[in-house]
Length: 412
Image (tube, rainbow, N blue to C red; front, side, top):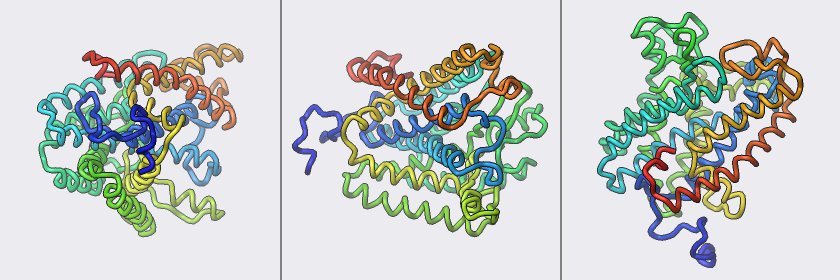
């Protein structure tokens, strides 16, 4: 093999047997690199949220109002949440297969810790203002991990079937509850316990005036189950792994196209012919993420599997950066939020905007009232700046985790 000529201490060479993660899971560099890649893409999405003029003025995936570059900028970030949650499921399977004896308690503690961070450090980082709960992907992963503390006891193929069943059937439960399984609900915020649970579990929306549950956790749990169910394939040698994953990836993409063409099941937002072929294509690709539809899951996971297969061959400085991001996902995630929001605050003050433009950014309309925002070239420039700032931080923390085994490091 070509890799046999590389230095033995090169972290990009897969040793045999493969190393383990801090949690005792099988380690695969391509998984870390894929996780790192989607972190970098996710930073672009949040940069757009903080700096783009149209971030709060239009839906970037609305084929009637958006334009190709904005649509592509938003659509590519659809990969992030699906990949994060899916790889979390793969990691849980690796831990189980490696014989982790305290997996149930680990998933419970890890899940509740992520929920706590989402409700405190992360929510404040996004808002920089009055107490506000912004329940996003970290909340969904945490809640799904709590559920996986029991589900992970089942055989992988059973969990795979459970994931598919939830993904295909949860819209029926959401619709039966009186809320369509579509994008974030904009109606009256629920007040009774059952309605609140439905919002947290099935149909994202506001709870009261200070809780925005963007990620209903049950459909995301289905994605985590899919990752767990396919986990055995990732433990095969590279040739066999590729032989199994490539047809799965192609099959997922074909399933997306078929369901989208049928346009009667798979996504609550039907596509339609638009004024131009480009806008028609954007309508076809405009799948629902809040909560994730079957079309969304099939499209994004199909692409993610192909990216994984491509990253298995990646070497060099870019690979090292992706490894640093992917091996410190929570740390890098939290850092990027505070770096981005701090840059927004500095820009607001430097350009003479009212200070409040950069505070209570989720709750208030100050961003709109003060005409804050820039074009996509500025968004991309700020994105690259944030990535440059993140690289030394992530590499430092990755090296720290590699040489030390302090218990608290496993929580970051």
